[in-house]
Image (tube, rainbow over all chains, first blue to last red):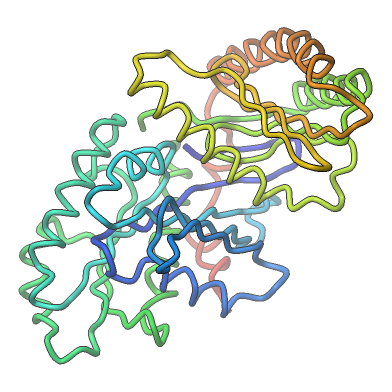
Length: 195
Length: 160
């Protein structure tokens, strides 16, 4: 649910990075944070366990500049990927404007990817959203690992509706901004259509 | 979309600001914030210059969402208020009209009782403004400024 403030001339949108545990959602946000000008970003907040696993969410506010006199602000969130944090994931999806599904390309994580994608679809539906209708992109992360499955195989399993997709190595930043730009564009396009 | 888009207009923004200013004065508060349930701040009053309002808003919304989740598990509708006591600063968080979050920061110059009392009055006033805002937003046509956004405008945002 974007928030349009005519008084302060701001558009605020919420993007959620979803995916299985350890797929690189937080790494995506950390890279964006490290590579963004200080004036365009706020503080990055990570609510993590002592072992650096996301406990509730990561949060990064970004300003993208002005569009027709309105400041565009994107609030990026990650969900905790571990299966047992499902209640938290549902909360973070509330009011979402766009979703990035970060898949772990490693063959042995394929089941976890599929489970997480099913979980995303179910949790969105509970909030009254459909994954087929909201702005949504897929990122195949960890392409640098030797055990990465072929993209074609990942696509068949994780992106049957062929939404925009990107290969990435979040730790080096490859594909990170392409993914963000794509989902942000889809969100703004949806806003333009009056969604 | 699942939930209606939240909009804010000048008139209601000024009314909400006036309510926050008055609440801050009458409750002897350090600061007052109005946040939507997704963590977007839209009104602030008092000593906010030293605060990271964006982060505070996001975390407060997360906190309220988590507390709401607990309420649901316990078959409660919602826990309408929360209070955090610090050494120097205390935080009173309440949900207004099931739509927005009202945060009052206060110190030893005030008390929880006074803040609660003033918050109750401000909540009633805010509810009236929010109701009128919701009616106005529902009756207005889609804002033309967004219909006029071109693909080029969107592309321009991403020119590094």
